[in-house]
Image (cartoon, rainbow, N blue to C red; front, side, top):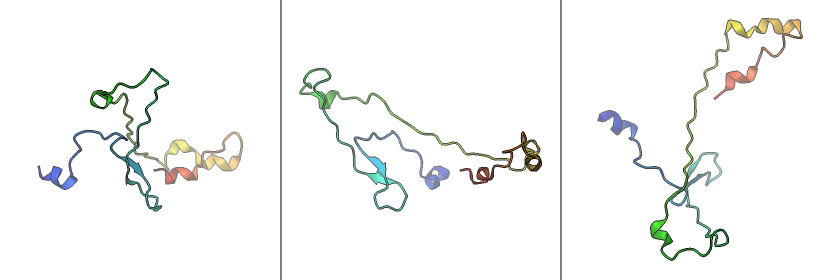
Length: 102
């Protein structure tokens, strides 16, 4: 119980963009909660909207993101970086950008 209190726990349900968006509001390259998106009623797709549509509205789809952690073994013996100095066909074994993988 203490671990959940310290960690903050998980939210009970997902929010939709009708309730809240996530964006960089102040230009500091950090995402903060933002205002909701408004719906646009499209009458040309299936006729005029029903008058009680706000009571019967249900979300059709949710998008979620799970980010994985990149584990890079920069010192693997299979990388054969020592062969880079020989030239083709043993090039591109050294990839400096992989040390910066996030």
